Image (cartoon, rainbow, N blue to C red; front, top):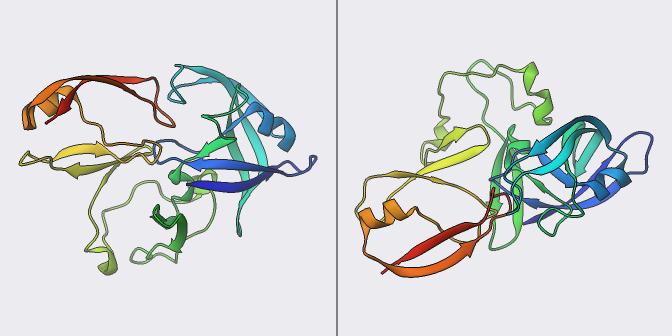
Length: 222
């Protein structure tokens, strides 16, 4: 799923970029061409892991006055800039953690993406809109609270920007699977495959939108 984002600095003409939605990524990542055209200010040089299949990538953290996606506008945004001509064939990636202040509905078959207000916690006002850069203004830790309208939802675990969901394969005990919209297939480890089914020899390579390197595997379940 792709988004048309408009990013820019007050001293530059806003630039339109196409960003790939990736639940396995964090924040906003763009290539150097987009950053230059949008006038994103360079803040600090750094290296990035987990983008494409070529290992670490050089780049820098930049600052954009605003990033607009549809009717939603974020102001004062830090943006990761990769020193490449493209990011996996696109202008960049956008992680779902950018929309952490909202209830996110992703409809892949119909290509639809919907943001709704999260139910307020007891004693708190309704959801505050704004980018993750404004998160410091609100408490970081909370006691667990499940709104009545969310009691039927499947619980997941969040580590940083990673979303892990308990999953069973055949009659196995629950194992934690990473939800990654940048992947094109379901992947399990060799060890887990041997625990839950028989395997036979095969070989292939899998590359996700934000994987650190190519993933090779030599078995397939039968």
